[in-house]
Image 1 (cartoon, rainbow, N blue to C red):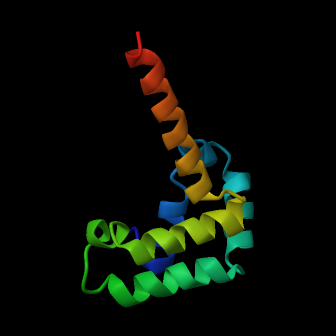
Image 2: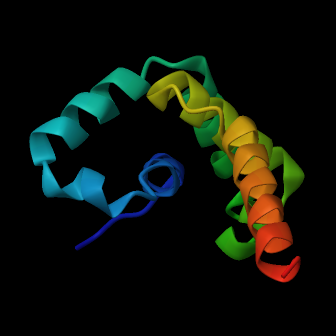
Amino acid sequence: MLFFDARSTAIAILFNDPDLFRNSTQVKKITLAMADKKSFKDLVSFFKEKLPSKSLEELTDNSECVSLVEKCNEEVFGNNQTQIRKSLQEAESKLQKTLFEK
């Protein structure tokens, strides 16, 4: 039987990279390391509070959830999602200009 709770939901959302699941030792190491991070604890608390009354789809569209996930990604994986997203948007804009200028 599978049991999904706020903690497992938070882990699943943070592990949105399928390559992480190819190495179970790495996943175990990451999950142990993230358990002590404040941002991860905040994300789990958010899900504990909200999941009983809202769907995961509703929550992941919530700006508070997005912010918590970004903070956790930055603290756990060293990824600043806001900067990455901005960089991707800038690259897309430059590409569109290049393609459509001709």
